[in-house]
Length: 180
Length: 239
Image (cartoon, rainbow over all chains, first blue to last red):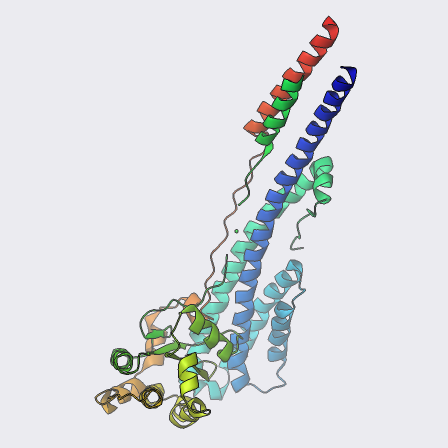
C-alpha cells in the first residue's frame, strides 16, 4: 500500500513535469515554425530582388563597358544575394544597397547613345526595369516589416520565459535571426 | 488516487496545440502560346493554335510557345525543362521558350519525339530557322519559320502527313515584325512584374500576433491539478 502510494506520487510528479516539458516543446516549436515560415517568405522576396538585379545587369552589359564601376557595384549586390549561406541581415543590407546602385546604373545606362538607338532596351531601361526594382523593393519592405514584428515578439518572449525556452532549446528551438 | 492520476494524464492532453506552411511558381499553362510580353499579335497566336490542332490530328503532339522578357538568371534550358514538366506536356509535344530581353531561347522535345527524330534535328532546325531571325528581333518571322518546320520534321519522324499551308502568312509576319510593340508597351502602362520577371509568383506572408496569456486547456489543467492536490492533502490530514 505504502509502495503503491509512493509510486502514485512519483508518477504524478513525472506526469506533471512531462506535461510541462511537452507543453513548452509544442508551444515553442509552433512559434518557431511560424518564424521559419516567415523567414522563408522573406528569402523568396530577396530572391525576386536578386533576379531583378540580374535583369538590370543583362541589359547594362550590352551598352556599358565591361569595367564599368556601376556594373561592378550591382554585380557585387547580386553576388551577395546569391550566396547560399547568406544571413537575412546580409540579404537585407544587399537589398538596401541594390536600390542605390541599380538607380545609378540605370541613370548611366540611359545616357548611352547605343541604348537610345535600341527601342527595346530603351523600354527596359526607362520602364520595365525601374518598375521591377520598385516592385521588388516594396515587396521586400513589406515582408521585412512582417518578419521584424514577428521576430521582435518571439525573441522578447524567448528571453522572458527563460525556463520554458531553455527546455525548448534542448529540442532545437532558438532565438530567431534578426535583420540587424 | 489512481483515478486522480488518470485524470491528470488525460487532461495533460489539453496542453496539445496544433501547428500549421509556400513555393515559387512558374507561369500557368494557357493555350499553346503563353506570352507574358504582350507583344505577340493575335494573328500569330491564332496560327500557333491552328498549327497545334493540325499536329495533334496528325501525329498526336502539340506545339507550345512561352515568351517572356527575362528569366532572372535561371538558365533557359533549365527553365524550359521545368516548364515542360509543370505544364505536363506529353512525350510527343515540344516547347519553344523565347526570352527576348536575354536574347536566349530553348526548344525542348518530349521523350518520344526526341527519340523519333534523328540526333541533331532540333538543333539544326533552331540554328537554321529560328536563331537568325530571333537575333534580328524579327520574332514573327522566327516563329513563322521554326514552328512549321519543326512540326513537319516531327510528322515525318512519326511517318504521318501534316499540312502547314495557310499559316503564318507574310502579311501576319510583317504585321508582327513591324508592330510598334515596344512603344505600345511604354504607353500602355501595364506592367505586372510578376509576369515580366522570371514568371515566378510570390504570396505575401501575413503576420497574426500570437495571443498572450493562458489557453483554456492550460487553465482547466491547472484547475484539475489544484483539485487533485487539494484532495490528496485532505485525505492525508484525515488519516
